[in-house]
Length: 147
Ligand SMILES: [Zn+2]
Image (cartoon, rainbow, N blue to C red; front, side):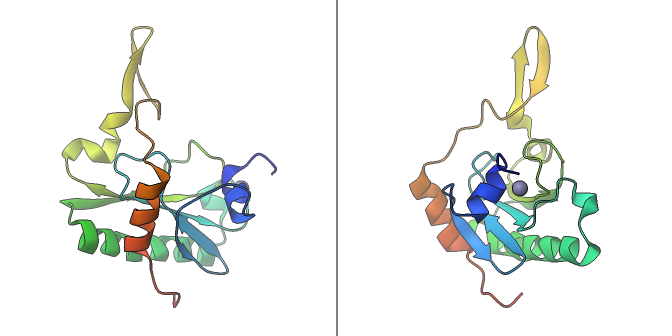
């Protein structure tokens, strides 16, 4: 999978703000999220569908996400934490963890836009945080390696 951005991050060919890494997974600050204080956790092995992950690996990905959800809550104190797998975007299984400060955050209301008279959803209107901001978030959310 030479065009998979997550595999390129794992190989060190694409820049990312890393929050957590162990022998199975990597957690980074996502490029596109409703808020930059978010985390994206994915297995180091390229597997497209989340439901195709071995159960222990899926559990590990979600457990790291759970710990990062607690950390986001501690550090940034949002109203709620949202977590989910939506399956679109990058075709490499990933788990999203993000702060929620509004009821529409869970449906990514910020991703809605109108094109050709139709309401669509996508990343086009989400601002990409600066590398400095993403590095700061990664530093504040860093987990100890004892998963
Ligand atoms: Zn991949």
